[in-house]
Image (cartoon, rainbow, N blue to C red; front, top):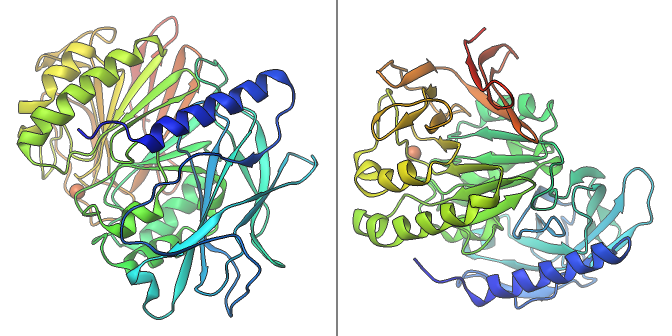
Amino acid sequence: MTPRSLLITLCAIAGIACAGQAAAQAPTPTTCEWEWVRPSGIRDVQWHGEEVGPGPEPRMLHPQIFADGGTSLAFTWITDLESVGSVVEIRTEPEGPVHTVEGRSYTWPELEAEPRRRFHEVRVCGLTPGQRYGYRVGGNGHWSEWHPVRAAPAPGSSDPFRIAVLGDSRSNAVVWEQVIAAVSVHQPDLMVFTGDMVGDGRLQARWDAWFEAADPELASTVFIAVHGNHERRSLEYRSLFVLPEDEFNFVLNYGNTALIVFDDSVDNSALADDVAPWLDHALESADDARWTMVFNHRPFYSSGEHGSNRHLHATLLETIDRRRPDLVFNGHDHNYERTVPLRNGERADVADGVTYIVSAGAGAVLHPSGGRWFTEVSESIHHYVLLDVAGDVITGRALRLDGSVLDEFTLGGESPSSQPAE
Ligand SMILES: [Fe+2]
């Protein structure tokens, strides 16, 4: 695995500095100071300026997270090619003073095709962990609406939070629009997408349709992308999503929970030689977290069409069994499935096993669901998962698009239990 880059090191340094400010007094949101590294292939990088083109209204707006600490967020959006206003105005809710933070913009070949457009990226540091903010983006008299967003709870904090998990929209914008609308009603603090957002990550038109369907809902939830096989490590994917570390494999400490994300769309030797030791170290380092969740695209356990991935079993399952995260989330098989607690290929006690959940019902054509010895609940249906993390208890729900509950479970508390579906 590629060592943590200079960017990451500087990111961590910036986070510490911001955390120091937070400890002193009410911090002031400001531009992050670090060496900025973006994918090779981007063009025409410009710092915030005054030029306004024919289409300066921000679109495809989505806040993202790229560092531990709860003191920073990234805000990204698209305008026409000539507009170079790259500003975030942000205030504590409901009516705090407005702080102005500047950033940069750039383009890439697919964005330069008609209609020619520009991508804006503003990284804001100096936030207060767990704080709820209002923000808008744009500049030079052309602004988005104001949207709410919440900074991450500080690592180790027991502040409650809500995560939405969903996956595999695969260019079905009609259903994806319904899914994201249904998820947003629950106002999650964080959304983790388990991969395969579009059918071909190299085609900007696919991303345009995906973001258009999610507008404006994505503007109010911090978004974490997990790389799927259909994203193809494209320049478009690497540009559109701002994530921690190398942006494919990373650990994010969010409150009392360690979120560990890895990219499984590499060959078996890379899974064995690079991902396995990285995952082992990530899980070992997460020992202090109350909860540990792993996210990758292909399922370790699935009774659906793709089934349990034998390559992951051969290369990574031993690490999972030995380190025992609380939850493993996958996508790829277009349905919902939760396993019984598992360890070493057998059913285990709740306290001793790992629960695997496939959530891949955000729009793609559904796969039949199945039932094997490891299946607790499965259903072939478009859906999403909500996790309410409240200190020592996680309450999980999988919801159909009509709002009905297809699965419900709890982890932790005085009596860890797995409840039947309603
Ligand atoms: Fe997939």
